[in-house]
Image 1: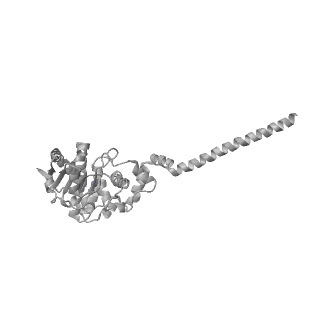
Image 2: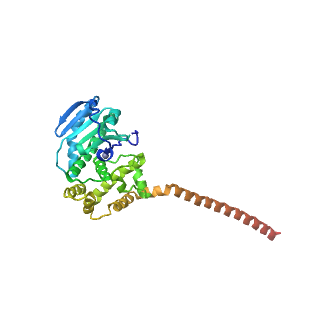
Length: 313
Ligand SMILES: [Zn+2]
């Protein structure tokens, strides 16, 4: 992951959907210590001791936040693996995605976190990652219980909301996409996110935005209501349609995103390259007209002077 603008690129993968299996057995030697708390077992690598301590302290809050967000009460033990180096983390997860700080394996109530990134960005970054991954674990429980899954854009959207703010890359990406008709179709984000950096960031921003829209327009209980409907046997799409009272969620959300940033949209449209080209053409034509008018006026004056001279001669 790059530093700077993607400071908190807490981008994770729902492993059951997008990441290969955890090679925990092959690299068990990397994890040298263990810590236990209520509903959590932490295995950590050498060098990650202080993060294990922090994870133990933060876990109850992160777990409660995830369960409260989804309106769930089940309390199964979560296993957390903490790696002190990028290499250890990547070996364990097999992830090739450079921008991930953590991976959730919801089908086995497991989270893996790269603490070398937390070393760089501090305790809050670690807390945010843990909260994010715990949402994935909670959705995993929902799927295990109902046999129904939620689309990835929704899963990531709720997880990003749980982080408390949108910090994934250039915040203008979404505005620009909404106002240039280049939003990624949600159906394409149901099972996997794009691999390229910009599209990937846009996918996360879209997910976060859909959830923001849902909560703003249809009430703070919307996520819980969807979960509740799914518990009663609805698919995600059916549950969503019932909660918003309509079947065109994506159309409504796109409209909301466009409406939300009208000024920025105008500025963007104004300065888009095509507008700039059009303005240049108009400007060039105006300059041409002014020059032509001046030239003509000069000719006319010269003619007038000629006339005048005729008159006075
Ligand atoms: Zn995630």
